[in-house]
Figure (spheres, rainbow, N blue to C red):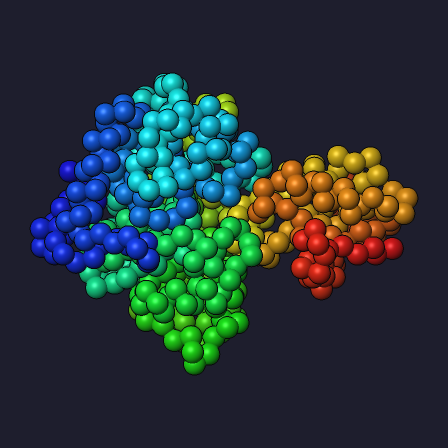
Length: 502
């Protein structure tokens, strides 16, 4: 038995009637019922000959049960985010050789060639299948596809022992208790919520509340409704939750005497968190603690805790990893890690240093007290405040598809929406329609929210081009960021805003 399965069986034996899992509304399972329902799905999946299981559902009891059943049955599992486009879902299904998908969206799966007549596994959730794609040879437990820095996301392959080891470390680091109530506020398809939310809670014996995302104010990458989140935290008496920075910002904005919760530990990750935001959160009684990690290391390698906390730092490394800073200032990590990547090129093993460390692409430093500070990124990858990783070159190439666009620079690291500086030929007519068309072709998280348009070439604007002709991205973001943030996308019917700056 795995650690997860042993924990479920133990809790079912010692506390059979205690609530283990609910959707926060009508569905509620005790530990005894949880074990029975997981075993039922194990039998269903084995009878259907499932080789690789995709899960494409809104948060809820069925998502958790399907994932736990696949974990117990040793069936490779691929969480498929609901915010992925149909093209991205097709890419994920083909790359990971998925032949079975548990879904609440039969129409999308049918369009991708999955037979929807296999039958329901629960109310509103179906098992869909297509002929085997040879996925039985996949020697890992979970493949997590990132939000996609480009249009074709890359899969990170993780084994079962690694997932459980990290979850066990998080139980210790966060001081998790059997009396805890964890409210799932992020999509369960995001590895951080999957590991630090579900698996950690199962090992600790705490209650899991997994309501539909809309009821916790998170209907997608944006917008976010902090009042709905606050209501959910209070209603379910949650003691723990996980948020991305933009969600925490919303909670702080609506903080007050009527927002008191029972939270003991609110983990914040997925993107850089400002010390000012963390300080403001703690000043109004929200116990927010920043952490740091990568999908390649099952989401968490360092974290702050109530016992050991430093505002502005990502926390101290967890015991199972060794973190160092190389001579170029890049963070490198050694310890249990992913097995490799799945991509269109096939399976790609990790590329490590000669002594076994994995370069992260992040820049950082350690302070004298051993706290890790993440200071930037080696590559030009933007991370929005909703935790979405985006290559600016991807979006820029779409903006440059029009002949009247001479230059496009996308920025917005740490912001809820992307912004763009566009240099156009002529008077800039047609820019609004062009950006709207580009936005319709992109997933929600990669769309342009604010756009500054100019007819002045970058070469005529001092400091915006590097000596070799490349764009000085930091300089562009600094010079035009304030201008862009002053725009209000909500004032326009097509949900984005622009200004002509000539």
